[in-house]
Length: 130
Length: 382
Image 1 (tube, rainbow over the protein chains, first blue to last red):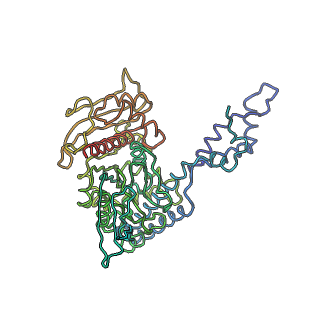
Image 2: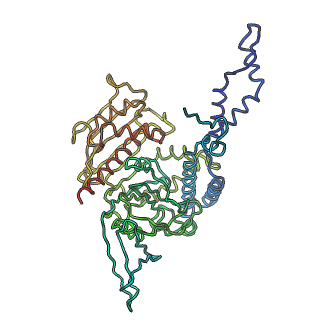
Image 3: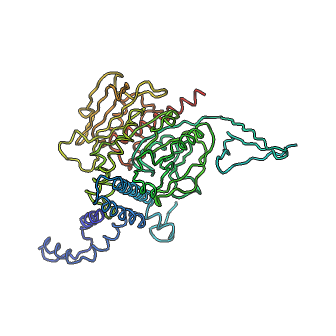
């Protein structure tokens, strides 16, 4: 959900077209808008770059969280006040907290630094010292 | 000549690199004799923090270790799922490591992690006392990913030990070992908003599930965790803001935060605004300082909290600029800063941390400075 919101924001940000062909006649904006919409491929590339920015929970932990939620709902369906139900929701809370901490640990990682560690010779990773 | 060897037994590890405890065993004698020489150069200062946010590097711990100096990392070469943080001066231990029941055990018995039946308070007391007296311990490790207890890790006595978890003040013996205790009291509305922010990206979570989870844990929380408030020397209470009418702030970003400080605690002087012992209501925004919506409102007063005399500093609103931060810092007193602007500097250093623009960050930073001040006073007295 969060990533789709950022993707829409990215589309809004990058909607200033760099090299759309300028129509010779002075019928400007309507034609430009149509020609931008008619080129979804350009927008697609930018979507990919933005999606990588928010860290995701490691898959095994994410699975554990959803499993525990399912189990808690089942346990509580019979008797919402039983000790088992409470313990099941407590487990959900514990796993959600662990997932959140795992995401925090990943957040400190800068994707550019990671890439440059493996590929120091690429253009983005060149350092210039005078 | 008797040959001496230094032994470390598996059960109680008495080896400590600071040279504070040496166990000597003589080999050549017919009968084994052991002489324990305990040389305490320094006693560890122990701080207790009661918080319900699990065992990760929480924002409060990050701010605290930053004020004390040095970054906090997991112990090198140890269990990657260790809950312990070690920095140059401080070690943070998560009390979940003293679970007597692992996740399967708790499920079988129908017991939550909030229930004292799931914790081994005897071991907690023994080990905290050992570290306070300068002896290293082998502390168990609770793995939050697998939900089981892992092999123990070695904890050597640091200068400052912080025990963080759900029950630092629950057991009376452990309470007596604490030099300062802090309770983070998040109100239910704010708790719900923060959990929504934290969990909505997870697959399978929904608003109803989050609410159900909070509601299910509430009885145990009220019965076992809330009562610790009365023992705390400082309480950081986080409430919804009063500056935005109606359900305006959905993300829980603008907050009303109270710092409740007990009077008469050794080495701990409460923060005050303008005139100690009076009641003040202050809106700094005006001619000298311009603030953006919703602004900032401060209050200072005194009263009683669970039968104790307390001073309360309260901040409602949001910081928008560095100017506001410095302006506010100029007017607060007894902050235990080492130089003018230290609070602002610490807040700016971690401007990306949650709570950096409201009272949670401000009061967490101030409490960190108070802890540093308490530690220095204790050390100076030796």
